[in-house]
Image (cartoon, rainbow, N blue to C red; front, side, top):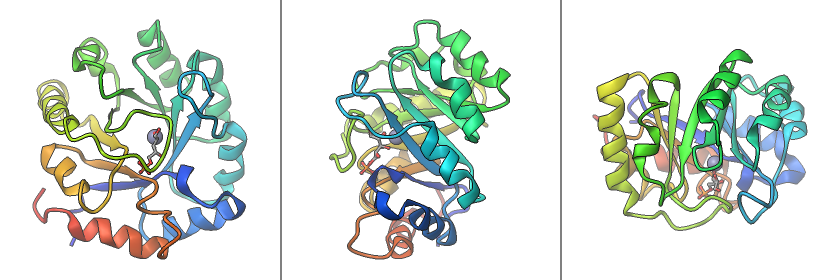
Length: 225
Ligand code: DX5
Ligand code: ZN
């Protein structure tokens, strides 16, 4: 049995884009808590994925919250577009937001929840001044840019340290992890303090139904995390 405190956020980057709406419906029916939308521009990361149009197309398909993970240069230029397209939450990287405080408050002014995220090699001190202002911290457990990469085990200690930081500042801030999350790594991330798990290729893996893949992750989680 899953503990109710752990949320699953399927990343549609790994979904079959030819039937994207159905994949999202399948995830909703299987009990997903939110849908994670990976936005890549070919500059901040070496890959291109999708933009606000995809969010807009999915908005009527599901009642789940949609969250945009912006792996793009100059994220400020696109905040309105994602807000208007219907996301509930926008997650920005600390590495390229030159005026992160302004960006975070811009998202809030648009009436959206805001998350900040950091790459595996980015020290957590980058969070310290902005933490009280955010709803969520996303710890990248792979280098962003591609699905299907191997979980970087050294990020476990980082998750623990971010957990402590959050607990000291505002324990209601969500701690999410993203990259290489599957039935083997999900319990480790949860033990380290993660409460929201993004998973792409472990859920939309085309080998088994979405519901079976999600159950596999859930049933691996510690019962009392
Ligand atoms: C990586 C993305 C992830 C990715 C996760 O750049 O931010 O959300 O889709 O994919 P998996 O779960 O396959 O590592
Ligand atoms: Zn992501």
